[in-house]
Length: 341
Image (tube, rainbow, N blue to C red; front, side, top):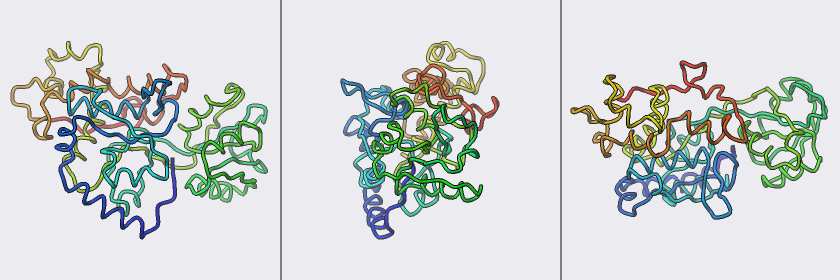
């Protein structure tokens, strides 16, 4: 989700701490301890949530598993640290986690003042609105006079004010500090509308007493590119995390899946053979500090981007989110990966 940045003083102090933490090679540290520490949401269905036995699953969780597969050839050498919106950045900057995969919006301040690096956008999102179907509205432009549940101290709150002002609409904000308080207030009928990232609305709707009585309105009022983040100062680790995401997208474009990845090693297509590390002169892995079959390991152990999307948040999941902007660039979306060569 989207929170106001820490103060400049705190940000500068943590930046310095992060720079120190990144002075060592993260890949070497990860290999030495034998696992990747991944920061995730405390519990957002479809993206990152533990079951009763403490086993994590979700879209962001699978990204971390993919990084583990690339580094170790094993998707299970990863441990998960649940992080709130407030402590997610300090946890990454201090070195408590090696990568942050927690539905976090890539912004200029986070990319600079907080000393973080983003590159691969694994989910193109935007702020939306959820209402009860009984309200009988089809558009956010029909919400004038409505009461709106929103979390305080977030850019969600600021975007809400801007949208209603720009469209000359009136509203009554119902503001809470904690996410579970916002959820409870909306579910109990204290407000007509709930606003946050649209992906979050799909997830949160599943937790309501009567999910089928609620609908997501079509309007998207902001750009929220959600991306994994690492600390500045370690280009090798930045490249590894970024290219794992790009490999998953490229695999979908090539038509390489978990089921056919072994067969695809025999493809006559040199791009596919290079991607899977079977070209004799390939260096796609060694240039990253990995084995040349790292992309093969990602797909074999976790799947391509489309498989991970559909299983966790797409039509094969309870959320049933349409691909939309997250479809491949040649399928009507904007997911586009540089070539692996």
